[in-house]
Image (cartoon, rainbow over all chains, first blue to last red; front, side, top):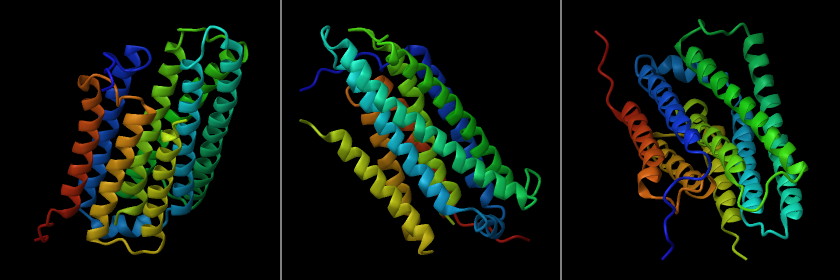
Length: 195
Length: 88
């Protein structure tokens, strides 16, 4: 039997932020789901204007980036006192891949926004697009912040800044990034697929 | 060497492809919405347990995101399946 750790990984404050973010997005998800009931036809028709393929690619990008981030965390947390430089170098490679995923997500989402706004669609077009823009733009900001956080962690790994027993920083940033992934995992089927 | 993280990624990618195909092939139905919501719960729980690393953490902290996921997905199902009263 594995002994359970008492506290979640990373700084405890990040978990307060994560729980608050989950509640905030959760309310928006429910707002979308219950508002849809008022005009199912409008929501279904508007949804057809979304690019499901870019939503799909962005989901794959985020789950893959989460995999890269946990590999970076494992590289650091499994280091020994003798393998500090090696572990940091290994983690930096995984983090660079994750940052690339964050940037790719940003480009694809921006292209999607460019297309939608180019069609003259905005927050006041209808209730579906109000929720779509609010949810995805709010999430987009989290991805950008998460990418920046990963970049800061990456810079620290490049100077072998994570020492034996010092995992808190990378675990904190990684937890935030996985939350961003978790939110999109619910958002994608809800907004892009279910009709 | 344990390859469980790779397995988790493969399951996440496969379930994402499944969700996309339901939409792309336009075969989304009331039955498949239930399957899709279940698969979304599985994906979310995999992220919570293996990527966020809460699998071996005290249940007090693990239960919060799991409850969140379960409640949100259940209420989305309620919003989807609850009969809509005809407008007057």
